[in-house]
Length: 248
Image (cartoon, rainbow, N blue to C red; front, side, top):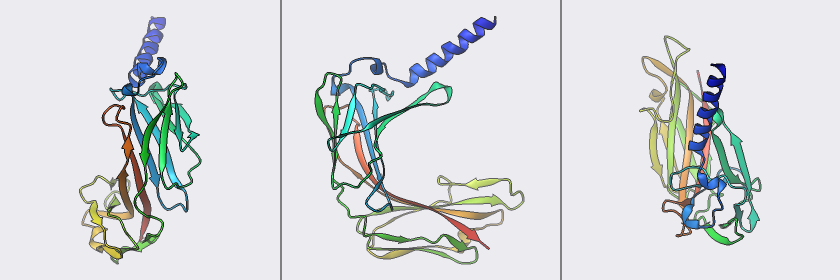
């Protein structure tokens, strides 16, 4: 009976893993039409450096393709393939680089197992982000309004502000978060401007906020090889995130 249970566990783990990873991982994939590609470039407040550059490969069913014979290159430099086993033997896999120097343009290519090299995706960010400044304090007073200010903004930007709140009757209970109904959402596009959060946002009869979270983002899309599976994409995101403490 014990042997049967062990066998059942092994079979279960095998099925979970098999559901997560494409069969193309074990085959010689030489047709771009079998590949779905998602390229994500994240930029932010680091001077002359991107936050991250990652490339995901999946099949038509969104299952991960993990094939060491497939190479991805950025501006003629090969990216690293990162593979990690997660809980229940599921896997994380993507191509990335630690060389995050900002570029005027990003040209991705793919080299398939048969040695052929093809264009994969391309984007040339149109906006100039390095001149934009957002003035966000480290802390605000619960008795005062909070005003976010910015200078030299030359691109439409999504602004999200949400709060983390504690129950006044039970401090062990925490709620709020980005997807709460109370989250403030706006699009800002003026060159210089401000956005004010009233102090009434921090507190009500049942809860009191102890942190605010600010997320500022702008998204651009580029071009992908039309031979890839429909839905393949490359995107460039400017992202600023900051947590603000609320003091008495």
